[in-house]
Image (cartoon, rainbow, N blue to C red; front, side):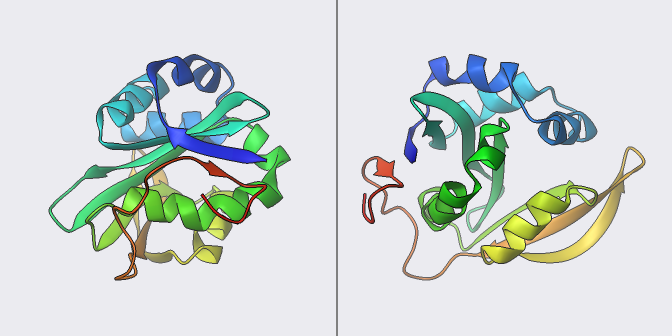
Length: 164
């Protein structure tokens, strides 16, 4: 079961200590440490934490690129992979809560990160191109926010229930 709630400072240590190798690599490619990314995310108004078995296991959110475009991000532990079914079930809500007033969410991920590419594609994201950053190929994804979504999250979500 995955429980989603607004992030707090105390969520960072467990996630940072157990961060997936692919997330560490992505942070380093983009020029920031994992800790810097988590702390920057925490400062944004759209930052949430996934709780698995009572422990913060991933943080995700969106930061402002422009009035209509948000930069989506997620950093987490291997508990995501161990709870794949619940994670996939929770994904539509995750997109919804970080949509805010944006029309689009976007970011780049390493082309070698096949799991994240499949997850983004299966949840409605599209890949628009590839660039090279520090010698690594990165794919840009774009998620078009449905008109009915955004800024409607008011509480916590429990993946064992069908509502929040």
